[in-house]
Each structure stands twice: as structure tokens, then as C-alpha cells.
Image 1 (tube, rainbow, N blue to C red):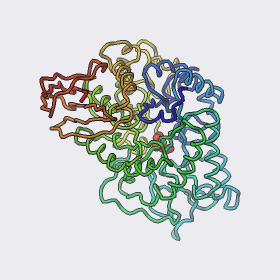
Image 2: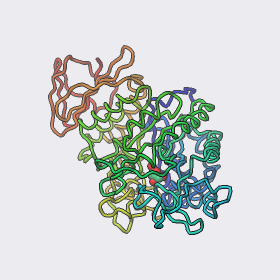
Image 3: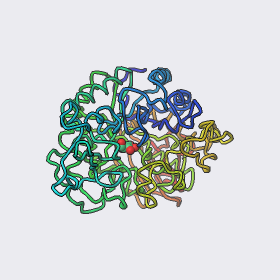
Image 4: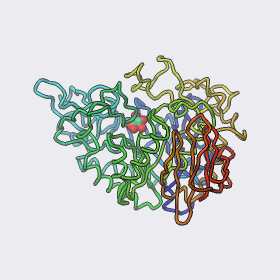
Length: 537
Ligand code: BGC
């Protein structure tokens, strides 16, 4: 690998959800050898790194985000030796590997929890968050689970409640206990020693809770900042002052960073689902001693449009100081962006892509986003995500963005597997298969490949500042500057052609893919619907 410890600044990280990427052994579930088999495809996208969603030993109640052994691979996905092969093969292709670490909670099947729940005096008794009931037998406080219902479940053996911010089978580890922190850090080290290049840190602001277990206040407005939480979920009606983003998180992140600093070139991207995510992203990535990067759900909601994008990016720019954002417009937790932002043409998808890849920061792209996949509409009977099952029909959960990748339109199950996949391949996706779009001039896939290839050669896009300019309606105009170089990005985020008068004429940039380019006449720029212009100042 090229030895550039700062590689992650401005990098593009391709998220693989291994269950749905490629099934190498015909059991209907994707696996690690399946990822290895498709590394040439990933490298062909011109991305820098892969984020692998969890592949660790797990009862799979939350599809791997419930870990029962932090140091092993679940047999569904393969073996540790398959993982070693995957890293070696990725590195040969210049791709870095980041793995998901779910530190804030474990599975209830983890031996730590099995021991912890046995009684109140065992060595792991204080490894999870246990609390007595109120006098009337009810839960200790008003905290709620993101996935619905109270955040507390009664355990009849200990005759106490335990805390879980997500499923009842995902008990919350007690980070106030120094032994827990020590253990978690040594598990992280296990993977650093195995050669990973970094981590995506799941729900990283959830590690600590208020020791006094104070009630959360009601929120003044519906808070949609966390992992798909919307108005049908009671979690949106609290201000999460006491159950997450506690001040003790910061020294823990510093300890984690100190460990990573012993492995130069490694990095972290934290997931922040918070009432005030942009501020938390800034707090957690500033100072060079905590996280390297963080992403929030701000561009993962249904809101879109030039004003919204400008406001979101400006807000974080004002807060960031020396911190570093990572932008994502899709992942395994939210509806596919093509549907969520109501794309009706390939050009519209390309405009969203151009925006994502020209903002200041690093970028995560979720598998299938490069094909323009839409959200799969599944029948209630096909749902497997407990979050969706709880909130159906108002919220259908996350299965619709987790259906298998479509490799080939003419193969059964889209070439994903010979067996019936764990979630069905969505009929509408066959037309967007890799085999259909590969080397097809105007395809979304080729637009991603060319744009990413061009972008990685533009230091100004990787590291430059960003500044927004006034623009009418659904037009977004910003410049990116580094040293003496400035690029101007103009996006027409509407389905009407636009003619803009800019302060001065610019020269269009060479080397951008065909879908980029307006028509200049002096300082007047004509852009078609969803048109993208990138010009040199
Ligand atoms: C992950 C989800 C998961 C949750 C609980 C999230 O933020 O991205 O997929 O269900 O954490 O681990």
C-alpha cells in the first residue's frame, strides 16, 4: 500500500454489506470470499477503501450488529483465514479495509452478558448497565430504545432491568467500568494487528449513559437525527441529554485514538446519530486526538434540495474548526437515495453524485448506489428487520435498502447467489445490473467510475476549502479552493433548464465525464435540468 498516513482525508469509502454483496457458497447469504471474488469490481470504481459491515460471530438478530464474539468471523460469512485473504487481496489492488466495530453494545449471547446476567456478584456483574426497578416495579427512567419501546428489559435472574438502546438482545456495555474499556480496546487492537486500515464505529456516541439515570427531557420539536428515527417513533419526542453523547465519551475516544496512533495510516469514521449531530461530529473530530472522521444522518433523511444542502453543509462548516466530515447519502440504515430524493432520471442521480463527491470531506458510497438502485418494495411477509416489523406500516424498516446486489440481469437471483437469497432480489433492479451498465456510455455506473477516477487526481477536491455563493431557486453554487487553485461547482438541482449570470466567465474543467458541462457565453452559463458544471476560476 502507498504509505500516506493522511490518505483518509478526502477518501472515498465503499460500503459493503456482506450479507447482500455476493454469495460464494450457495447458501443465499453473501460472505467474505464473495467480497474477495468481487474486489476487481470494487477497484474498478476508483474508490480508496472498503467499509465492511459486521461479519463477526452473531445470532444475527440485528444482522451482525449484535456481536457475540468480537474476535471471530461468523461461520455464515467464512473464517478468519478468509478475512486474512480478503485483506491481502484488497491491499494488492490498492484498496484499504475498514471494519465495523460495534462497541457500545454486544449481543445477549455474548459470554460476557451470559455471565453478567447470572447474578449480581460475578466478575462481569457490572459490565452491562443494570438498574433496580422503581418502587412500583416499573422501569428505572424514561429512556427509550431507538427500535421501539422502553430502553429497559427485565431480567428475572438478577431481578433487575438492563439497558439496551436498540433491540432487547443488544444489551448496552457499561463503559463507566474501566475493565470494559480495556477489553474493548484490546479487541480493537486484535484487528489492528491483523492488518485492518481502520474502523467504522457504530453508534459511537452511545457508549456512555448518565450514571444517575436522569430522565430525558421532552423535546420541543420532533427529533429525527438518529438511525431512521421519524415522527412515528416515540424516540423522536425526547431530547437525548442523558442516554447518549455524554461527556465521558470524549476521554474514551482519546484512548481509542492513542491506540490507533500506534498504527500509522489507520483511521476511524464514527457514526453519529444525535439531536445535534453536526455539533457532535465537530466535537468528536476536532483537535486531532479523537476520531479522524464522522458522519451523521443529516444527508440520510428525506429532506433534499439546494437550500437544505446549503444549510446543512454551512452549519457544519461553521462548527468544524479543524475537524473532518464524511458525507453519505445512502447506507444500510436508510431508504435508497434514488427513491428517498425522488430521482426520476439518471441525470438526476448523476447530479446528486456530483454534489456528494465535490463537498468538502470524505465520502461513503453504499453498495448499489453506483448502479442507481431504488428502494425495494417488500411485502410484510418478506420483512426480516425487527425495526421495520415494529413500526410497520408507517415505517418499513431497512430491508428495502439491503436486498442483494444485482450483478447480472440474465442470471437467477441477479447473479448474487444460486440459492434463494435471504432477501429477494428486487425485480426493478435487474435492469440496473452491473452487466447492463458496464461500459455503457451514459450509465450511472460509468459516470461514477469516471467521476471518481477524475476526482482522485484533484487535490483541491480532496482537501480544499468550501465556500457557498448566492444562487437562485434550486441552484447550488460553491467553490473549492486549495492554495492558488479554485474550482467552481454549479449544480442545477431542478427539472427545469436554467440560465445563470455569474460574476465572471470561467473555463470549463477538462477531464470530467460527459454528463458534466454547461454552455458558457461570456459570464452567462446555461445548464440543462439536473445539469452539472465544474469550472476553473
Ligand atoms: C447501525 C445499525 C444497527 C444499530 C445498532 C447502527 O447505527 O448502522 O444498522 O442496527 O447501529 O447496532
